[in-house]
Every structure is written in C-alpha cells, then in structure tokens.
Image (cartoon, rainbow, N blue to C red; front, side, top):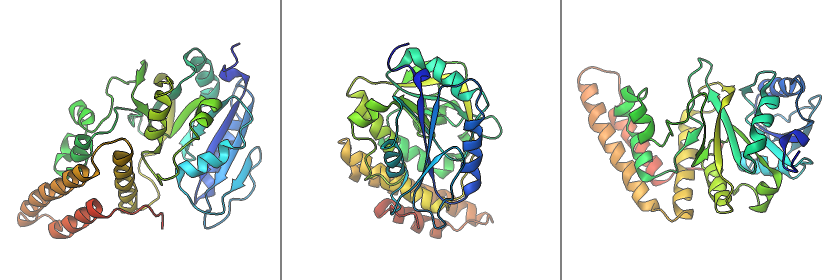
Length: 307
C-alpha cells in the first residue's frame, strides 16, 4: 500500500450543533461499517446550547465558542491521528459498505479532495460537484422567478452545478461540497485548514482553491453514494444570510468584485419584485414589497451569526 492509501486508517470528523439524534445515529453507522479501515471518530460540538453528551465509539470535543462549520472541522482535525481525514455532516445516512467502498476507490486518486454522489431522501442528486462560483451563478440562483426551471440541467449549470457529475461517473471538477470530503490530513494541514472567517458556506470552495494551487485536485466519485436529507433545521432566512455573507467574503478574497455581487443581488431582488407584484395583483398570497425589503437587506448587509 502507498503511504497515503486510505486503507491505512481514517480520522472521521463530524461537526455537531443542536439535536443529538442525527449525530449519534451517524456514529452508530460508522461503528457498524463492514470491512473498513481503522476509524478514529471525532465529533466536534460547536458550542451547542445543550452540550453534547458522550457518544460511545467517538471522541467528543466541545468548543468554548460557536465558530461555524470550518472552525468546528479545524478543531477536530487537530486531533486526527490518521493520514486521511473524512469530513461528514452529522445528518448524513450512509450504507454499511460506505467507508470500505470510498476508501478503496479513493486510493488510486490520492492526493485529492474526493466527494461521493450525495442524494436527498428521494434519491435526487444534491449536485455535490460544482463550478467555481461567479457573480452570474449567484444572480441566477437569486431569481425566484426561475423556480419553475430548477429541474432542468440548464438551470443547474447556470447556478454553478456541474451536470457532468452523475451517478456512475468519476471526474475531476472545480470543487465539491463539504457534506462529505475525503482528503489527506497533511494536505489539509498544509494550508492551515479552513479559513475561519467564513462562518457557513463557501469555506470548502476556498479550501479547495488553495489546495488546487498545490496541485491537489477535487474529484467527484459517482460510484459511491451517501444520503443527505434536504432542507434543514435552521431558519431559511438565516441560511440565506450566511450564504450571502460568505459569498461576499469569497469574492473579496479571490479578487472578484463584492460590489458587483451586491449590485447583481439587488438587481435580482428588483426583478423578483416585479414578478411578485404581478402575482399579488393577480390575487396570489405574495408580499411583494416585504420580500423586496428582505432581499435588498441581504444584499446590503448580510449577517454571519447563527443566532
């Protein structure tokens, strides 16, 4: 085996906040994996309102301050003993052969950042493979008037999803989402992990751009699959604020134009207002003006706070 072969052992890092049940269920699934490499399971409690109790089979670390996704992962990787880390969202469901299959099929790809196919509870892809973000992607994603086209490949490409990445395919892509990422521990540490200035969203693409500068690619592995429930327990308006705040930070860091992004989001808000106003006149239960005020507020002053 090569030194970076995932079969030598994997340190699994799971960020936790809030409800204990999904995290405990994921740890149980990891402990029940068939014929997989030795696993070190590290759960990082990102200063939940109710401290996470001990979980059998896992090392539980509690942060003193809530710092968001990247901060939680960084805290966990500090304790990683193995040469490969596997980052998993706490609300994932994985089959019993998941780690074995992922490790075996990732071995010839290393060093790389690898994500499997990720589907929702209905089996629909959550498009884990993405193109590098642009202002155009954010503009199209903000246009609620295009909601009817969200099942088309053309819309997915327009918002930055790499539609080449389908079940069964394996290919190099610009970046993969952070719900599942397997990569060498040394690579993660070589770029000092996640930029903790990102509270939630965009931190994984920022990490992968820095790794790509060191010739470590991102790979979609469509022959292995995990399930990630759609939606989420947090307030959608907060999730949107986190996303926009992180997008602005990303634009600034990677020499795009935060001002242009703000203008594009404001333009999308005005287009949405025009469509919503017509719908409201037609008798639909839509608060066109209230929605406009909310969307313009996001584009001007998004927040990074969880609560």
